[in-house]
Amino acid sequence: MLKYLSPLLLIGAFALCGCGGQAKKADEKPADPASGVAATPTTPGTTTPGASTPDKAPPVATTPAPSAKVDTSAVSALLKFVPAEAIGCGFVNSQQALSRPLLRRMLQTLDMEQEIQEEFGREARVLNIFGYADEEGELRQVVCTVREFASVAEARDQLEASTQNELGEPTKPTRQSHGFDVYELEYTNVAIRDNVLVRTNQPAFLEKSLAQTGPPAHLQPLIEQAGLENDAFLVVGASDPKALAFATDTFAAEMGHGPPPLRVLAEVIPKVKTLVAAGSLAEGRLAHLQVEMTDAAAAKTLVDFGNSMLPLGRQAGLAAVDGMGVDPPATVKLKKALGAILDGVQLTQEGTSTHGVVTTPADVAQWPATLGPIFVALKKKAEETNRPRNDLKQIGLAMANFHDAHRNFPPAAIIDESGKPLLSWRVAILPYLEESALYDKFKLDEPWDSPHNLKLAEQMPAVFGDSPDGRTRYLAFANKGSAFELKTEAGLHPFQRGIAIDDFTDGASNTLAVVRVAPDKAVPWTKPEDITYDVSDPLAGVGELPDGKLLACFVDSSIHLIDLNRITKEQFKILVERADDTVIDFDFDAN
Image (cartoon, rainbow, N blue to C red; front, top):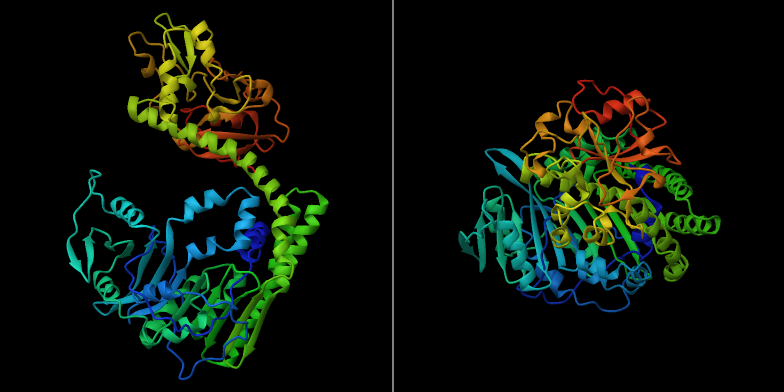
């Protein structure tokens, strides 16, 4: 798992913006949760281990309290939805996090502030409640998501999207409960009041949440320890020993099937009693973790495990920086920042308690200026790398939608009555690329280079590339037996001359459709010209690719990077032909 941790993620998301700190007990009076924001629930795949509350509060990691008083009344109001049956809750204050000056400066440097606000700003706060339900003597995991939206309109929009029937029509609420309109759907239950949306798959648990009697006594001290003023926190604890065993055993079983380094967790997770984790993107603050175990030996095992993972994380992070392809000065800066983050991680044991603290690097306030330009360059590089893949994906989906409309994929060309090719398939799929206005301007009974159509060639959609001369590198295979073979039977409509899905006996996922050829093989995007390969040399049509990697879209719209150095010409021919009944028993994906 650690090898996939990108230093860009570590630096840019975790410590780049600082980390949250230990809170004092909040003394603000909770407000009525009648206002807030919502969003699609993020249900965790595994129940986090919970435990019964210890007889006395466990020792708290010594971290500085925030200097300025923070209004936490909205958070307190949301926490009322946590019922007594909860074994934990996870909270994210996205509205507060997005307002942090350090994060805003970095996002502004990356020119991503508006994009992030549009993506995450709809929700002010989100609370995931983890619980259990006893169904005929068997415990089952329950997740209840409470989403407070920035406005009533945002909440209503989300509700409408969540409660439409099979015909896309809005449904009416089934009943009312505690001032909420409740919608009892086939697989879930949704409740709304003003800008607060509540969702769970367990009706009884929903009722207990809507009663707003929380937070329960066994979670209250853990929540106070987490700190309501933080941008995010997670607390776990159960008053029922049966629920504790259920939660920890479930999680331990998952860890037992994980990579060998993580399997040690399967032994200690059943000994977890409570867990508190919190963080903030405020400058000069800390992230902290505290896990209370059943015995000191288990606490030591957990600390030893965490400390053993840190060198692996450092090694993986440094290797990832080396693989980013940035210049040496930038590499040094990134490695220094990564080291500062990991140097700030401290894991300690105190009796049966495990403490973890992440301190903010001393120079974090300068990171937007020092690391921002590096991230901008990496962002640009990533966009350049991912754009062709995204373009091909859109082309593949447009082909699929064309098939839905015409019962066959687009033919290689739009032809006239005499069989003369006039325009490319790229013109035929324009309506399925949200380019209907451009499509309507073409004269489909004239060739691509007619005076009228040639002017339109100057308006190449971005999905086909950005060449100023209107040439595209996205070509299809138009040979007999390929995906874009042109049917020549008389009496067919021009759009009925493509191949139907049933004709791909080799399978849509095993047949090439469109590829990104070498620059010297590019053609005018409206011209009905594609790859008609020589059987003796099927690779000739794609040109000389510097790295030998061919980006390809298969008929099922899946995108692959084919390593031409790993396969033979005959094997490539197998990928092109749709019905040669040859099993693909070779690996063609680039590593």
